[in-house]
Image 1 (cartoon, rainbow, N blue to C red):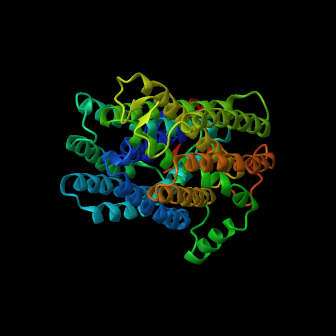
Image 2: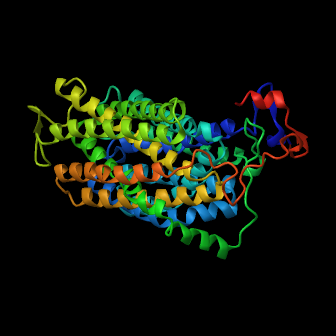
Image 3: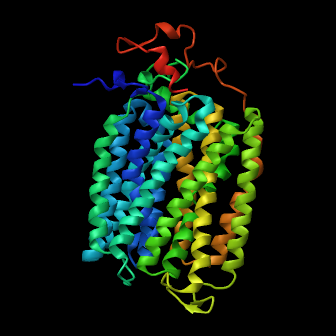
Length: 468
């Protein structure tokens, strides 16, 4: 059997950080990306918005619970097994939505949402550790861009599949063929998870290894988990984490209310494209501006904050023109087909929301990855981040299930972002220019790089330079 850690072809090395980030991105493409494409259709592709909101609220409530422990579980099981378990819930959830469409089975839909919440927390903890700790510091923003771009390509292609199947249909819900295709792709993700290398086998482009801590006992892991709640930076980032998925319930509700089935598929495609644009933007800002690390972070955050305010301000101007009881918006009866002229502006608005949403998430990840390079700490931070993020999503989907006014949902989503801004800036102000050689837990060994070997094979210097 081929030893993946030593596999190389020309300048390509399987054990390089970029290869590993791409693999994780492809896994997300096949699992979370397909799930996002389905979610972006509004109500999971069904017409029962109320039940979908209950399932999503259950999902994020369980995600909140699982997220706190997911980082420690990843540190114990390793990224391969953690991701493999983490991706199973996505296939189960799509099967449950399909089952509901066919048989009207509500309890399985809600149960699958809860199970997905627990398993997804495992996937995202492992993903966060790989994406934030494997690359070099100078590449961490672009690492997010690569991962998020691949993940959202799943959303984009999933939406394209849906659009192709639904293009000639004006039915309000999504067809069975869509669910079958999504389910098959999600099952592939489970197998792909076993292609991820553990941290100690990854070699960066500067000839350094991703070092890991000695194995920790469950008690030690628990103590490190508790330490997260004592870290002022994690507390300061709480509003940002809470807000980072809060707005999706509102945006999905608008999509379901305003557009018919095939137009929702088009919106899902364009919002996936918007997310890719947003991820590229934040990666370029954080990694390529000719400034010190701190001032790059400040400049990047200023751009993201400005874009958030511009888009959400425009969204407010649109939202004040209708409410839940409206049967017409902009003088046209809803749901709209894409042939209706009034639909163009709101479709562009939804795409713009996802551009700034991706930039916001990228800024959150970059902020965490600037605090430390330690893969164990970053796994815990990623789990904490997703837990708090999911708490916000659970609250927002709960509000949507209770049929809160659209305007209230919009204003709360925007105000949470505004509240987050000064606290995020404070954390960025305190980041170091580099964490190499500073942290107590040694994560990078540069003292004898030429003698370093991976599974008995030395790393060729010329090949290493190809990763820089």
